[in-house]
Amino acid sequence: MLSLGESLQTLLNRPLSICGLKLLSQIPPQSISLAFFDPQYRGVLDKMKYGNEGERQRGRSELFQMSEEMIGEFIAKLHQVLKPSSYLMLWIDKFHLCEGVQKWLENTTFQSVDLITWDKGKMGMGYRTRRQSEYLLILQKKPIKAKGTWNLHNIRDVWSEKLSSEELKTHPHSKPKGLQKALILSCTKEGDIVLDPASGSFSVFECCKELGRNFIGTNLESQEQ
Image 1 (cartoon, rainbow, N blue to C red):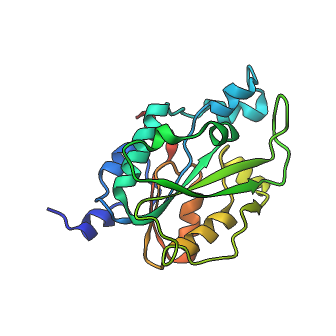
Image 2: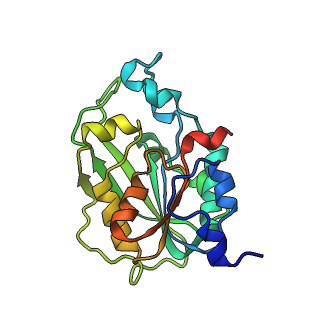
């Protein structure tokens, strides 16, 4: 039987293209120091009633869509592989922010401990108001504690960062590397493992390479395989 180190070694630091749930089942319990999760769902598109998406929304609407049940399954498995008191950085839209995600957290000890609003510095789509922000819900696995788990104290709860045109072209759900780097620095040490089971453009992987962290992740488009 492979040891913990040997079983993880085959997954580390390469962009995988396997189903995210299958990937999570290969990771030993309590071996991950930090996780990011950006679930792909049609919530914001359906709520805003774009109808037939135009060119600007086509890339987003054509991505594989997760059901609420699948998102819950991902979060349950993320809970299993995270170390105690480690964090899950969960991207949500404004409708889930208002209506809550408690159903996703059933059968876990995850607790909401903070929220960051990402000001994207650009005007997006919207039937009523135009979207300019996204939200990062910070969940911590029990036992809940700040000391020793959160090391940077200059991260603002409104983070302004505009993506480059190249980043926007890479993936419809590209996220800010500056914010991701700050969170990785705050919640991990060099050599720790950061997980992203719905990696999209693998921006978290790029951050980990720059910061000396190990990475495990796979592309979201493979979830239907």
